[in-house]
Image (cartoon, protein in one colour):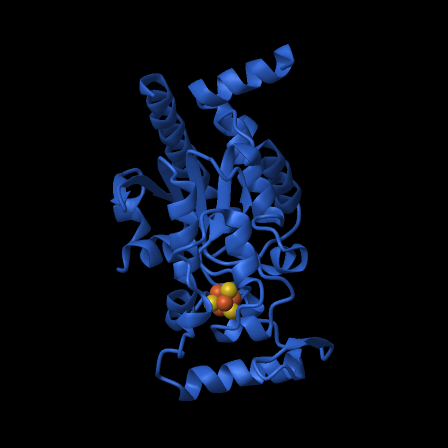
Amino acid sequence: MSLKKQIINYLALNNDLGLNLLFLDEKIKDNVKKKRPQPQIIAVEKEEIPTQTTNNLVNHNVNNEKITKNQAEIKIKEFHETNTQTLNINTKLYQFDSIVNLDDLSKQIANCQNCILGATRTNLVFGDGNPNADIMIIGEAPGSDEDEQGLPFVGRAGKLLTDILKAINMTRTDVYIANICKCRPPANRKPAADEITACEKYLHKQIEIIKPQFILALGLTAADALFKQSHKMADIRGKIFEYRGIKTLITYHPAALLRNPNWKRPVWEDIRYLRAMYDNYLQTK
Ligand code: SF4
């Protein structure tokens, strides 16, 4: 590692200058933005829903018929308006007991249509990283870039996550990154409760296979899905929870961080805390 990188890593780990280094790119963007009149930034979890949709052919529905994006979105709207029942999950298709590695699990669920999100995805986003990682990072669901590439956290928020890891001297290959839901909710809305219920068993199996020592949950959707109750971020961040015996830290989702720069400092504190716990673990290993 070059001397320059070592110095940056040292500063990143040891003082607030690291906070500035970590978000240097974002600060430059912030400054560029400040020169133009900007609409007021409101800290919300939801993305804006586009009013127009393309009419290109996408995917197949559960009956293997081709449907357009418009048709799929109408179907989803109707589904959520009229159907109050949980989807009938065909658990027989997915018996995981004999599965002991991520590749086999990925193959097993590649064609999953257990919830309505299967109809509109381009790619199922299974997860990425080190299958033997000590740290597992869990987000909400894929966005548009992730859906296109089939990989988690590859858009702007993903780049920020990569920078955050870099600031604690880690790369994406040191950790394993996955989401609660493996398919993109249309217009980047939050996954619905029935979609989380349909999908979370895949995450549970990933956790069982990877056996991480630490989980970093990004955002309230991920935290609430893991712990099966609603929280306020202010109440839970900066604390250690136990999830299935695994030390779990919760912080803001990088996408939320991009919308609200005031959350950069708490995230910085949280990831330094995670790094400190991890270093402690390595010493006692
Ligand atoms: S979100 Fe999960 S349960 Fe729903 S179709 Fe995709 S993989 Fe299957």
